[in-house]
Image (cartoon, rainbow, N blue to C red; front, side, top):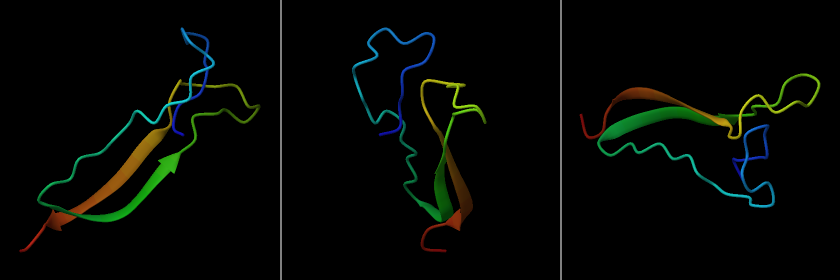
Length: 60
């Protein structure tokens, strides 16, 4: 799951996978999900960050 309750969450009991990175026609390198929790465990956002490296165009 890539979401978590935060200070602005309307429905904290819901767990969802919201974030997607569409890459049609792209050649991707490493892809990762980075946590949005601070060092003390405080949620800095209600969803995690997706990081994707675009290395070029697919098929070229």
